[in-house]
Image 1 (tube, rainbow, N blue to C red):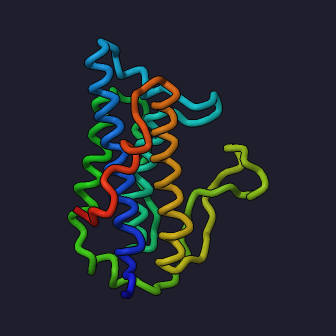
Image 2 (cartoon, rainbow, N blue to C red):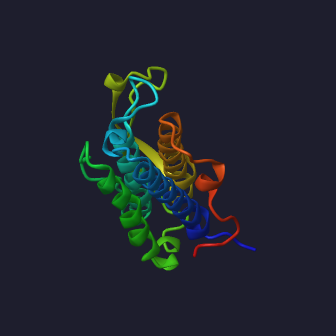
Image 3 (spheres, one colour):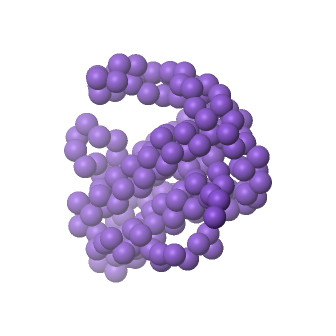
Length: 188
Protein backbone atom coordinates (compact mmCIF):
# COMPACT_ATOMS: atom_id res chain seq x y z
CA UNK A 1 0.00 0.00 0.00
CA UNK A 2 1.29 3.41 -0.96
CA UNK A 3 0.54 6.45 1.16
CA UNK A 4 -0.25 9.60 -0.76
CA UNK A 5 0.42 13.15 0.36
CA UNK A 6 -3.32 13.46 1.03
CA UNK A 7 -3.21 10.30 3.18
CA UNK A 8 -0.29 11.67 5.19
CA UNK A 9 -1.94 14.97 6.06
CA UNK A 10 -5.67 15.20 5.63
CA UNK A 11 -7.06 12.41 7.85
CA UNK A 12 -5.10 13.58 10.90
CA UNK A 13 -6.13 17.19 10.36
CA UNK A 14 -9.77 16.15 9.94
CA UNK A 15 -9.64 14.00 13.09
CA UNK A 16 -8.24 16.90 15.15
CA UNK A 17 -10.83 19.37 13.84
CA UNK A 18 -13.65 16.92 14.58
CA UNK A 19 -12.24 16.31 18.06
CA UNK A 20 -12.17 20.01 18.88
CA UNK A 21 -15.64 20.46 17.45
CA UNK A 22 -16.88 17.63 19.70
CA UNK A 23 -15.26 19.00 22.84
CA UNK A 24 -16.56 22.51 22.17
CA UNK A 25 -20.08 21.13 21.61
CA UNK A 26 -19.87 19.00 24.75
CA UNK A 27 -18.68 22.03 26.70
CA UNK A 28 -21.59 24.12 25.41
CA UNK A 29 -24.06 21.36 26.42
CA UNK A 30 -22.51 21.13 29.88
CA UNK A 31 -22.74 24.90 30.33
CA UNK A 32 -26.39 24.88 29.20
CA UNK A 33 -27.21 22.03 31.60
CA UNK A 34 -25.51 23.75 34.54
CA UNK A 35 -26.66 27.29 33.73
CA UNK A 36 -23.07 28.44 33.24
CA UNK A 37 -22.09 31.12 30.74
CA UNK A 38 -19.55 29.55 28.33
CA UNK A 39 -18.28 32.90 26.99
CA UNK A 40 -15.61 33.41 29.71
CA UNK A 41 -14.06 30.10 28.64
CA UNK A 42 -12.88 31.78 25.43
CA UNK A 43 -10.40 33.74 27.57
CA UNK A 44 -9.26 30.77 29.70
CA UNK A 45 -5.56 29.84 29.62
CA UNK A 46 -3.45 27.00 30.95
CA UNK A 47 -0.88 29.41 32.38
CA UNK A 48 -0.72 33.22 32.38
CA UNK A 49 1.85 33.52 29.59
CA UNK A 50 0.10 31.08 27.24
CA UNK A 51 -2.47 32.10 24.64
CA UNK A 52 -6.16 31.70 25.56
CA UNK A 53 -8.70 29.25 24.17
CA UNK A 54 -9.88 31.58 21.39
CA UNK A 55 -6.30 31.78 20.08
CA UNK A 56 -5.90 27.99 20.20
CA UNK A 57 -9.06 27.48 18.14
CA UNK A 58 -8.09 30.08 15.53
CA UNK A 59 -4.52 28.78 15.33
CA UNK A 60 -5.84 25.23 14.91
CA UNK A 61 -7.98 26.37 11.98
CA UNK A 62 -5.14 28.37 10.45
CA UNK A 63 -2.64 25.51 10.63
CA UNK A 64 -5.22 23.03 9.32
CA UNK A 65 -6.64 25.05 6.43
CA UNK A 66 -3.64 27.18 5.50
CA UNK A 67 -1.15 24.40 6.21
CA UNK A 68 -2.83 22.37 3.48
CA UNK A 69 -3.13 25.46 1.29
CA UNK A 70 0.64 25.96 1.66
CA UNK A 71 1.19 22.60 -0.01
CA UNK A 72 -0.60 23.98 -3.05
CA UNK A 73 0.74 27.56 -3.07
CA UNK A 74 4.10 27.46 -1.31
CA UNK A 75 3.01 30.34 0.93
CA UNK A 76 1.84 30.00 4.53
CA UNK A 77 -0.43 33.05 4.77
CA UNK A 78 -3.23 32.66 7.31
CA UNK A 79 -5.44 35.69 7.91
CA UNK A 80 -4.96 37.87 11.00
CA UNK A 81 -6.50 36.44 14.15
CA UNK A 82 -9.93 37.72 15.14
CA UNK A 83 -9.25 37.60 18.87
CA UNK A 84 -11.71 37.28 21.74
CA UNK A 85 -15.18 36.16 20.67
CA UNK A 86 -18.30 34.53 22.10
CA UNK A 87 -18.10 30.78 22.72
CA UNK A 88 -20.67 30.11 19.99
CA UNK A 89 -18.36 31.77 17.46
CA UNK A 90 -15.54 29.48 18.61
CA UNK A 91 -17.77 26.48 17.91
CA UNK A 92 -18.25 27.58 14.30
CA UNK A 93 -14.52 27.76 13.53
CA UNK A 94 -13.64 24.04 13.40
CA UNK A 95 -16.88 23.30 11.53
CA UNK A 96 -16.01 25.84 8.83
CA UNK A 97 -12.45 24.50 8.62
CA UNK A 98 -13.78 20.96 8.22
CA UNK A 99 -16.08 22.04 5.40
CA UNK A 100 -13.16 23.69 3.60
CA UNK A 101 -10.86 20.69 3.98
CA UNK A 102 -13.47 18.07 3.18
CA UNK A 103 -14.20 19.90 -0.08
CA UNK A 104 -10.59 19.41 -1.22
CA UNK A 105 -10.30 16.53 -3.67
CA UNK A 106 -7.28 14.31 -2.92
CA UNK A 107 -5.70 15.23 -6.26
CA UNK A 108 -5.59 18.91 -5.22
CA UNK A 109 -3.03 17.86 -2.58
CA UNK A 110 -1.44 14.81 -4.24
CA UNK A 111 -0.32 16.71 -7.35
CA UNK A 112 2.13 18.63 -5.13
CA UNK A 113 3.93 15.56 -3.73
CA UNK A 114 7.72 15.69 -3.64
CA UNK A 115 7.71 19.43 -4.35
CA UNK A 116 10.59 21.31 -2.72
CA UNK A 117 10.24 24.96 -1.81
CA UNK A 118 11.27 27.60 0.65
CA UNK A 119 8.37 28.72 2.81
CA UNK A 120 8.26 31.78 5.05
CA UNK A 121 6.76 30.89 8.42
CA UNK A 122 6.56 32.47 11.86
CA UNK A 123 9.13 30.75 14.09
CA UNK A 124 11.57 31.64 16.84
CA UNK A 125 14.39 33.65 15.31
CA UNK A 126 16.68 32.00 17.84
CA UNK A 127 15.54 28.39 18.44
CA UNK A 128 17.06 28.52 21.94
CA UNK A 129 15.02 31.61 22.91
CA UNK A 130 11.35 30.74 23.49
CA UNK A 131 10.34 34.32 24.34
CA UNK A 132 7.54 35.51 22.05
CA UNK A 133 9.47 38.73 21.44
CA UNK A 134 12.15 36.68 19.69
CA UNK A 135 9.74 35.30 17.08
CA UNK A 136 9.51 36.43 13.51
CA UNK A 137 9.19 35.33 9.91
CA UNK A 138 11.82 32.83 8.83
CA UNK A 139 12.39 31.15 5.49
CA UNK A 140 12.68 27.37 5.75
CA UNK A 141 13.31 24.80 3.01
CA UNK A 142 10.67 22.04 2.94
CA UNK A 143 9.31 19.36 0.71
CA UNK A 144 5.53 19.09 0.71
CA UNK A 145 5.85 15.97 2.86
CA UNK A 146 8.26 17.51 5.38
CA UNK A 147 6.08 20.61 5.70
CA UNK A 148 3.06 18.45 6.57
CA UNK A 149 4.96 16.13 8.89
CA UNK A 150 7.14 18.64 10.72
CA UNK A 151 5.08 21.83 10.71
CA UNK A 152 1.39 21.43 9.87
CA UNK A 153 0.54 18.22 11.74
CA UNK A 154 2.49 19.09 14.93
CA UNK A 155 0.88 22.54 15.05
CA UNK A 156 -2.61 21.13 14.48
CA UNK A 157 -2.03 18.55 17.23
CA UNK A 158 -0.57 21.14 19.62
CA UNK A 159 -3.44 23.62 19.32
CA UNK A 160 -6.11 20.90 19.43
CA UNK A 161 -4.58 19.33 22.55
CA UNK A 162 -4.06 22.71 24.21
CA UNK A 163 -7.73 23.60 23.64
CA UNK A 164 -8.70 20.26 25.18
CA UNK A 165 -6.46 20.85 28.20
CA UNK A 166 -7.76 24.38 28.74
CA UNK A 167 -11.33 23.09 28.87
CA UNK A 168 -10.37 20.17 31.15
CA UNK A 169 -8.68 22.54 33.60
CA UNK A 170 -11.87 24.61 33.60
CA UNK A 171 -13.79 21.57 34.85
CA UNK A 172 -15.47 20.51 31.62
CA UNK A 173 -16.55 16.85 31.60
CA UNK A 174 -14.56 15.82 28.55
CA UNK A 175 -12.15 12.94 28.23
CA UNK A 176 -9.84 11.11 25.89
CA UNK A 177 -12.77 9.48 24.06
CA UNK A 178 -14.19 12.92 23.24
CA UNK A 179 -10.82 13.94 21.89
CA UNK A 180 -10.10 10.82 19.83
CA UNK A 181 -13.63 10.18 18.58
CA UNK A 182 -14.40 7.12 16.49
CA UNK A 183 -11.25 5.29 15.49
CA UNK A 184 -10.65 3.57 12.19
CA UNK A 185 -13.63 5.24 10.56
CA UNK A 186 -11.57 6.72 7.73
CA UNK A 187 -12.18 10.16 6.28
CA UNK A 188 -15.99 10.17 6.70
